[in-house]
Image (cartoon, rainbow, N blue to C red; front, side):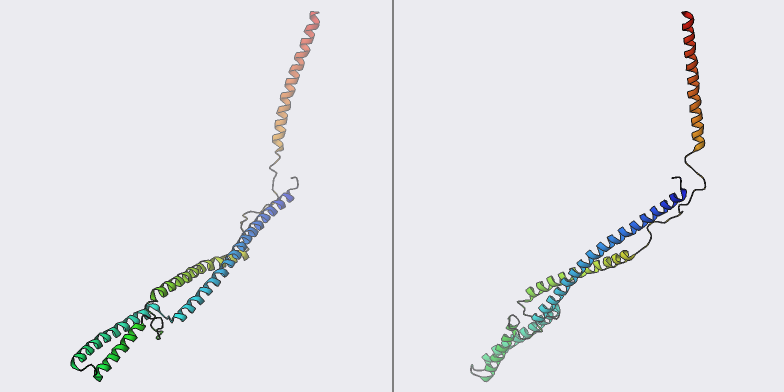
Amino acid sequence: DQYQDRVAEMTNYIIHCLDSLNIEITSSKAKNIREFVGLRMEEVIDSLRFLENETSTFMESKGILSLEDQVSIGVMSAAELKSKIIMKEIELAVAKKTYEKNNPQVFLLENELESFNDKYQEYFMNNLNDKLFPNFKDVPEIGIKLKILEREVKYYTDVLEFLGPQYEKAKIEETKDIPTLQVLDKAVRPEKKSRPRRAKIVIISFIFSLVVSSYFAYFTGRWESIKKNKRYDK
């Protein structure tokens, strides 16, 4: 272009447009990521709340505070009660041998033994009155259910911990307006012309004209000489 100032302005404008386009593409990409991650986070949070409520409701319905501790205490209590039953059976056997069948002492021991046995059986019955100790028959089922709920809660918790930083990063990228190109030297009007190289064109044109002229003069003279020779021969 013969207007060098316009060339410099065009060059600088192209760089500006390229930088603006890069920023817009980056911002648009970050926006799409933020929207996608945001929707996914809402789904995860809803699922996590639902599972937490379900876990709380299930534990409350089963009287569970800490299944492992409650089962451990329940087993110890049942074992202690079982030892009392064995000792009471021994006392009753001794009393039967010592006293008559209708003796009040025998009757009292039989009632105590029956009471201990009923209490012991409650650990394996669904109508267990003491909610501190879970029904031993239901422990495997309760344990499996709790493990499933805890695993699902942990899964969604881990997903949320992963998505959180991604969401915040996308928010920062979306609002970031940092130039993507570093201009080391802005385009300005050149101090001297680089093209077209007129001196070279002039020299090449002169040499080409000289060669063509020489050939033209040579062939013209040769043609005239041939014509004269033909005239003399006649």
